[in-house]
Image 1 (cartoon, rainbow, N blue to C red):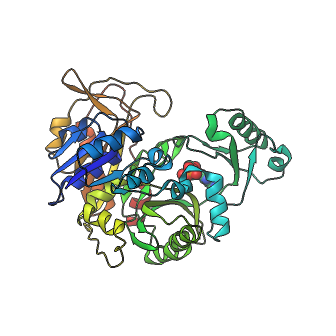
Image 2 (cartoon, rainbow, N blue to C red):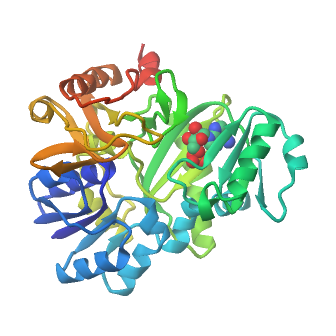
Length: 426
Ligand code: AMP
């Protein structure tokens, strides 16, 4: 089989690496990939941007690609799956209509309300009907969100009414371009965040191993929000009882609702949850794809064949699929460029990758590229170093052994990835 992975981040490196392990796979192409995917056996990069759907389709037809797996949300929300399917090509991911669950927060909130799935109270506004009086009447803190895709930056948590009004006005005036033309103002939920990711095909579903990520830049989960500074699997907070609640109260009604709304779901479905002190799994957001960096530790633990799993979903025979997991814990530490998540440096030579490659675990690349024979930084999140261990604490130790082997100018990373899970283990 020939596989095409769309995207060029750490998630796509992990998807390509795992796909290449399938004995049925002859070759994996990654568009556009990164320096890490270029180094993997059986994998090569194609220089087509992940959002250039027509060029991707032309490549897939020309190369007779058997299965395309789409990493990022952009092409999914733009309808890549519909386009490939209408050309008779197999493409793993939700249709454009189903991907609105991530593409529009107001749509997603209305969906949650309509299908009685627990989520924070909210109201939706445009510039034409924005009401500062509504904001002033709400309890603090308040969460202001741009409706559309904003690369993880369209969420502002506001401690005062004035700052919430300012954030709302900024979005409505174009701070996030078209993504902020509609905004959602939401009640603030406290609790602990969990990522719950499944493979779905209509109402058939296989939950993946549990995971948790760290969104804030700095140790202790403070500082600005990022795309994710690290993640681990399993997440000890997800007890068997909580797992059951998430399936019954979130995943199953969501898949039923998608089907009854006429937009049945196929692909990875990611529920970002805030677990309330009473155990209620409130949905913060749905993503229509695998998480980054959750993909990296989760796929390190997946022992089953990823391509078999994707094909079972495409053929609507997911029910009864057995998915085997490495019982060990996996923990990934994101190594980011100086300045991230604001303007960051690019082009710094990365040292120590060869040494790290000889250590246990795996370093997945994200923002990296070749320049004059060297691997240099080329994005905000540059690498994700993943360790496997008998406990989250052990996996953490191994991940940081990898991190310490690698260096570049002004590299930044957190020192406490996994701290909540490790506290629970103790
Ligand atoms: P989202 O893109 O909607 O998941 O929001 C990004 C991050 O903002 C989440 O991972 C949370 O850390 C935080 N967040 C979003 N909505 C809320 C909320 N209603 N209450 C508390 N934190 C939130």
